[in-house]
Length: 80
Image 1 (tube, rainbow, N blue to C red):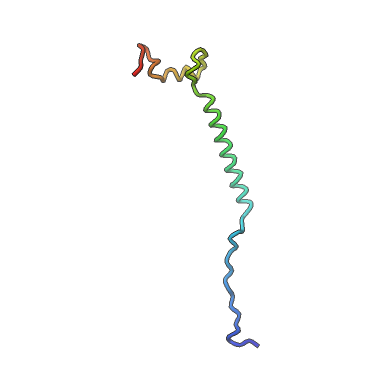
Image 2: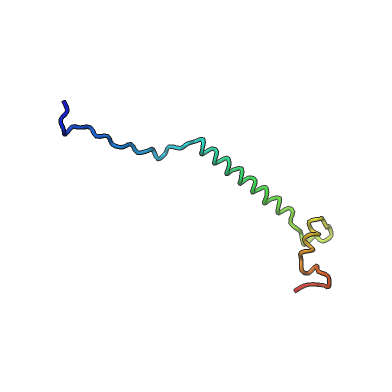
């Protein structure tokens, strides 16, 4: 027999703060890893295609385009 003082009250359940949707975590992690991997490859490749100023004997197509941008390689001596 229940008296008015013994009425059971329901405490609202709080969501578990340590519940993870592992499929979403895995998808986001793999996407982020792919982006960082491709960014690293792009940085490595871009550094290899840079014009080397010290090696003036070998003129690759990339160095020819770099020389045309330098002010000292302009006709007439150039320089600032």
